[in-house]
Image 1: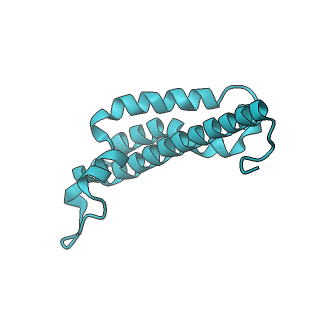
Image 2: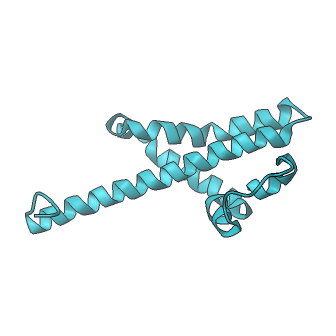
Amino acid sequence: MLGYYKKLYAPRYEQLLPNRVEALVYPYQSGLILIYLAWFGAGLAVRPNFLRQEPRWIVPVLMVLLFTPHAVLVWHGDAVDIDRHALQAGIQFFLGFWLLVLFSADLGLVAMTRLWQERTGRTQVGS
């Protein structure tokens, strides 16, 4: 994604991330699929009582859900600097998406740990 905005770079800009890492972190070729997955994940997180039990999910859910209005405002708002504002919208989406992925992985690890503790009768992983 950031590679697309090369015309916004300063003259002596050096790329921070290697191309392969950038393609993994910002997979712009399959962007529509990621948007649908993020909306699905945000929709699951909005189910009743979940956000009250896990308030940390509010930030990435709002980041993902507010990406579309942000992108529409960028497109219709300023005809001169669409690229610059679209970069902000893209970073907002990818940050929210990766936070949803990491929070989901954390939720899965907590569930697996609880299941392991119930099966073995241990209260701590190291004991």
